[in-house]
Amino acid sequence: MNCTKYIFVTGGVVSSLGKGIVAASLAKLLQARGFSVAIQKLDPYINVDPDTLNPYEHGECFVTIDGAVTDLDLGHYERFLSINTTQANNITTGRIYQTVINNERRGEYLGKTVQVVPHITNEIKRHIRLLGATNEIVITEIGGTVGDIESLPYIEAVRQLRYELGAANSLIIHLTLVPYLGAAKELKSKPTQHSVKQLLENGIQPDILVLRTEHELSEEFRKKTALFCNVDANAVVQSIDVSSIYEVPIKMQQEKLDEVVLQKLQIEDAPPADLTNWTAFLDKYNHPQQKIKIGLVGKYIELHDAYKSILESLVQAGAYNECSVEVNFIQAEGITENNVAEKLRDLQGVLVAPGFGSRGVEGKIAAIKYVRENKIPFFGICLGMQVATIEFARNVLGYEQANSTEMDSNAPHKVVDIMENQKDVTNKGGTMRLGAYSCEITPRTLAHKVYKSTAISERHRHRYEFNNHYLSAYEAAGMAASGRNKESQLVEIMELTTHPFFIGTQFHPEYQSTVLHPHPLFVAFVKAAMEN
Ligand code: GLN
Image (cartoon, rainbow, N blue to C red; front, side, top):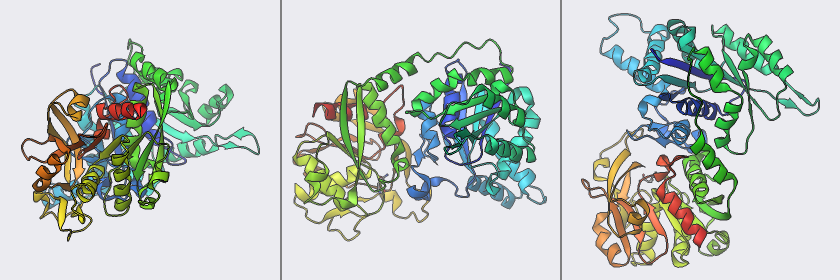
């Protein structure tokens, strides 16, 4: 291929259509045909990144190796493609404006009036082309829905790029919803027609339509939609509801989405997509030999998107172990010493989730005490690990009022304390300990058995850390720091030596688990739960 091809994915009619999954599935198919594919998400909101957003607003923040706090769709990209994304894969309006305004203050626009067109659109286009330098195909997902005021500069940038790149080097895929009217027993194409009209008003003719639907679309329906929307009949692709997001690449292959894309981009002689490993995963996922229940103790239990990567990591680890993992969400706030036995009944393992602030912390402590004493497999992530150390301090070491400085800045025993280099930080966004750090694992520990290595690298997102002042007391009582960062000596992994499986990590292993490479900690946790 002599020049990079650009694919834009837009959405219409409603949000939450699964644009990210369709984009990641297409990327998977193209990657499985041997192309180097990059995939990015452009988010139209004004936050510079989602770091300060409440999970209720936005779901999980996904953290990349270079420490970018990004949209959860990047998690899908990594899980589908087994690639590392970076800040370049997620740009927001806030970041675009920040750059343009900084340029303006430096006098870089040479006295010109700075405007949405061309300055903002140029900056958007620059970000899209950036990934083209090192990849054969760039897929750009435009967040939001066509017609939103805040999406307009992105749509305009796509219009301009399409003109600059030419039809053979760029492609627009528009994703819409086909509603089914139960009373009339009919699927409706009108919302799609209107949505395409909206795109046309903005100067964009989509090349391919992907239609989300709960029912099979007939040949006739596709032809009619094609006719009204000026697309080829074979470029109307159905995306039917499936039981697992990991089925979507298979569905898209059956619909020949990748074939149509290659044909329109005038790429010939590409080998067919080799999905052998992917289908082997699905086969295991669909034929579990065993079933377990894992309790996920957190505070956003009504909102599964808040724990997206953790849930997917459990699914992947389950499939790897040929085990179906049912996750029971348990509201941390509702747990007390009195009801904990009842709340955690029937669970083969308990995972205590990451989080911020004091809500639910005492419930998490009660849950951890119970699983520690009853030898139920436990996995604590970030705040989950911190809380495990607080529980141990209070109930084993006898420091009754031990706490984290985050929860009680006057606690007599701050076993989890603010990091030295965080003390003077006042800005909230993008200022935590972020991104990948190396970790040295102590030989002959559970962590070592799990990772089968003494040198690992994992991603972080937190402001507080285990207080090394107390480490010797912990180790003497059976809780060991089995992973530490060599330079800073920060404790990265804690484990209980007297328990079958009790481990907490200051980092977030869930960001590195993918379909084809499930994370060893999740695999080991599920296995321990299966044996429980
Ligand atoms: N609130 C804790 C901290 O900032 C833990 C963060 C997390 O769980 N990601 O250190």
